[in-house]
Length: 156
Image (tube, rainbow, N blue to C red; front, side, top):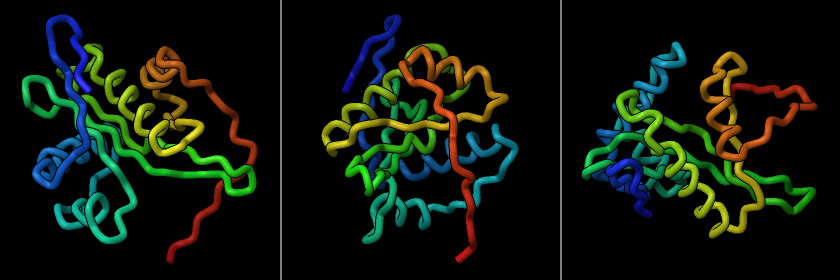
């Protein structure tokens, strides 16, 4: 998928093995933005995306052949409703390219992928204090939903 925004050609494609170094850099930048440190390495990312038990897909946005953002996606679902969805697990755009349509192009790619996989919805989360992300998602048609159940976790 390619879109033109203000004389820039933004292309979005499925990430390949050759993109792992650029993705690691962007994943680290996103983690740092949230006050975290990324712990994934090249092998872990290769396994997550291309291994025998791959659990994520990544769309890579480029301008003039250079990576400027990515979307990490996971198929999810509600078994009792027989509804499949797609979780926009990460959405990252390099600071120099924000506000130029890169995020919109990545979301459009995610929507098309979701439809091709038989998904009925696309989910995304944002920190309640991150008003910039929340406004951007709302402008792209996302609707805020109240979580009605507590989420629990347990280490395995």
